[in-house]
Image (cartoon, rainbow, N blue to C red; front, side):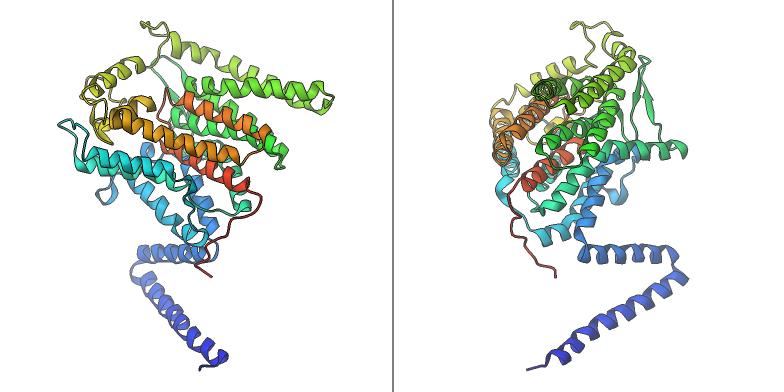
Length: 448
């Protein structure tokens, strides 16, 4: 047997030697290879923080979604598309969090649905000539990664911090956008051919709108949950709504209408019951909505009625794109064309911006047919219901309206395949579920 004092010396020796060797390596690198020394120091700091405060890494990871990196950098480092490299980096950074907190597979249904769609792709789907196995594998990995964020077993207090950070993503995008504007790297606004001026921050307008939609809807739920920080949630609610309006994006505004209507009904009802303090949020809400709509009305008119279309309202080419993808999907309606096939479907007939249909129902019908799309949406519904069961009835109503907004939004944009929507969305669902539990779930402590 080795005594405790002697054992501690034996354990301390390797760590002391490791520290000494690391110091010697960094000292030599600083002299002969400064760039390598900086990289090594950064890596060492990351390892230390990962092992001692893994949750801190998770805060950084979620904040990175405030930037549309693929629209700021168009290269392919190491021969890998920048967006794929970014997603891989997110997963690597979160490995310490996963090891410490563990995974809970109760919300894993969408992952299994995507596995089933991938199996169908290689067995039953009818491929177009441009479809390849590499495209299918890449699509599976890219679509699956956000749903991994449904599985991490966060502690309740950490989950609540994540919720507040998600609400701050639009403001962070604007702040970074200002810095990029000053550095002449990226413009804060986008001016369309119609003359409409759209706010974009460190993103493109539709991506900033996605962040702002989530950042507007979440405070409604959190205020009803009564988690405290009332001033914080009302403040970010106003800022994020005005940011959403300033992006000039119509889909998410329409998707928010049911939640806004119920909010006014709910708050008026409480005011009429004698809770006079609600007169302030009522008046402030009316002022914010009226101010936002008034300031952007000209932009919405330019975007909606500048061009004459068969529908009467300019849908930015969506009606033509939807007809195109539906026609091509009709050749394999049961099992689809294969997961990821939609990304190579545009043969030049449509505007190049339509890499996907801007309609998630058509997108997954194209990839997975009736079977695959039903599996995926049923899996999402199962997750939604599990989270709903953890909520109290008053909170559940706002949560269901949030989901209704998501379903409406999915008719006009890429909600399940865009980082700026699906990652904060899945992250919030998981955090809402964890934070609504009566007690913390047992953590899987593998690093001490």
